[in-house]
Image 1: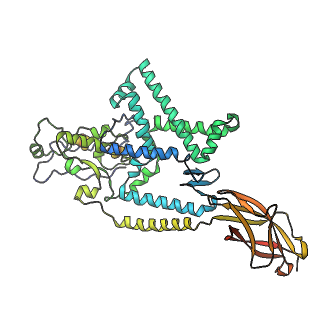
Image 2: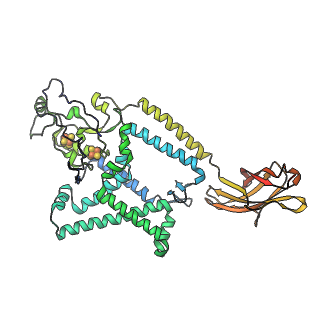
Length: 487
Ligand code: SF4
Ligand code: SF4
């Protein structure tokens, strides 16, 4: 679960720490559980500092995108939609259909390869800065909790206090707000899946006609409420697979939130008016053992124990320690973004052979993805003989077959389509209209009759090619079978 930490030696020429380094029993149990297995509730102190400010700004941007994604339209398509029910996806207003399965598969591979290289180089930057769970938990729910119940010590006192009107009001208000927010998040998730139009339709029409949709709204709301009100950091520790496989991706060159044990050990409390020279000569490092880094940690760990699976790289401990260092007049950065090699040997972050290999794979996948998207056909057609029909005798001795045509228009404009036989004499007639109009981003269906001169048939079944023309330009050629009399 945790990387082994190196032996801590005092700087050359100085005595060993007067207090031995106590790594504790943190490997024996999770920070969020008591030794007997019961949950230890984390009352994290509210962080403050430059990293927290930057993360707050970043979170507002991402929260805006997250809530607006299904509702913002680009050329009438949602900015983001992942309709797994109908297998229709919209990314930046571009619709992707089941027929684009290869593009989707390559996009998924690219995404996972991207995560691998990103994690190898930058550790769990994703978790701390962009993961929706961390953002919503730390930047929305936790902040509301601070607002209603106060900082960590007030929350702890409230939890321990006997039930009173004040406690009931605070707890009731908090959980009502959490439930309302969970409802909002649940509805947003639903709109990602079924589309914002369908969601608005469910909300605004007779509920008796949408019992399934309303059921999902309720289930999503309860799931999010359970996660943010009760489950919290356990989602990162127990459920998220990313946290679990990160240990296979991190190495000594990966950038992580790390404690500089060379500078910090041996720990000893700071004495007022203490002279640094004297402190060093006594074998003490810069860590004043104030536990501020532990107090702010939302997963309850002590970063001084080394890289741990529970660490979501939220930077709260960096801010807490920087503020302590500033107060006692020592350089900031005792806890900072660094690699193990950076701390051990002062090496700058390096682009290692492993990162280079991952980058080559990633570049290949990105190139393939771009190629597939750029060469994605504007329309995709299926032309099949109408089921249960045989050939018919048409005018002037020609033979005709009836076909069902399905066309998917992937463009953002309505396309009038024509069909022409390729490589042989004959004609294609669209039933009931001169042209077949396929609305933008829609799948449309029609019937066509193909008429051929029987002299051109090669047997009872002849392979024919039909050109699909949009605005006078051939966009596709579809092969199909034509049946005629036995020869
Ligand atoms: S150890 Fe630091 S960076 Fe990691 S989760 Fe705790 S506070 Fe956040
Ligand atoms: S906040 Fe800094 S000085 Fe205080 S215990 Fe943590 S690492 Fe040591």
